[in-house]
Amino acid sequence: MEYAENILGTIGNTPLVKLNKLTSELPCLVLAKYETFNPGNSVKDRMALQMVEDAEAEGILQPGGTIIEGTSGNTGMGLALAAVIKGYKMICVISDKQSKEKMDILKAMGSEVHICPTDVAPDDPRSYYSTAKRLSTEIPNSWYVNQYDNPGNAKAHYLSTGPEIWNQTDGKITHFVVGVGTGGTISGVGKYLKEKNPSIKVWGVDTYGSVFKKYHETGIFDENEIYPYITEGIGEDILPKNVDFDIIDGFTKVTDKDAAVYTRRLAREEGMFLGNSAGAAIKGVQQLKEHFTKDDVVVVLFHDHGSRYVGKIFNDDWMREKGFIE
Ligand code: PMP
Image 1 (cartoon, helix red, strand yellow):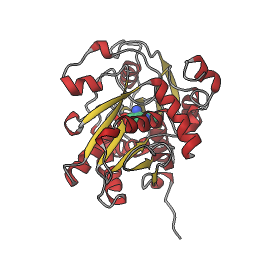
Image 2 (cartoon, protein in one colour):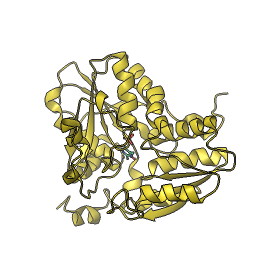
Image 3 (cartoon, helix red, strand yellow):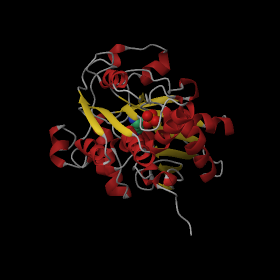
Image 4 (cartoon, protein in one colour):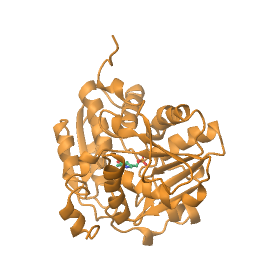
């Protein structure tokens, strides 16, 4: 018999899938690292489990304890899975721009959900960063995960996602393209791949309204780059410790409209029912076209599942209201 001891044993070992229609104008092979095959339907299951197991090993997460995190939903889902199996209480602090589906999913998994305003500065006491921190000081026997700065985040991708991509491509990968939020995925995978072959190029996909691209190019944290945007999961108004700018070769910015439109195209042209950041990632690959040649093997990572966006990206009224479709 072959079975996992519990659902956490099914995290990782996701497939690589060739893109066909949306990459027909590109000279190279483009492969998607398809992370929705994880049990929580996103790449975040990997780092959630790693951070919980690191905290247990360090003794900062004790039996019967409460896990607290500020999360756009996917990390919350991964943490909720770990909490259910390992017997912890879970509190997710989420910003109000996140889809209702994400909030409902967290509740379905037994999490308590606190909703905070999006349009306040990170150090404002109402922000989801501040609220998560405050709750962790008020609730006894609780642990604030802090995926932005927690080294277990990038480490999970260094230990699992990176080696999987290297092995699945037989070491032939030449470029890795991925959306950047906390930076865990790009930094962990990028570090592993560059240790294997320093000539592999690592590109981040950023949003308009986020600081990453400008900071990478100039070293300046420019507040003028920060404004509200619609794309979920990528871009930041802070510099998380998990973004290792040294292993990143460059960033490309994708508009909210393109991210939304390309998320729909992935579903209808490739049969890939994915989240908003996947649309941004594949548009990012198209924007980087001039960097690719015939023999290149480009891997783009798709973070999460389309079911979390049925009320938004996949809803015609919402798309029209935002001016993304006629
Ligand atoms: N896409 C989605 C949907 C996400 O939830 C996240 C995590 N915020 C990302 C992309 C970015 O991944 P990372 O945090 O590892 O940079």
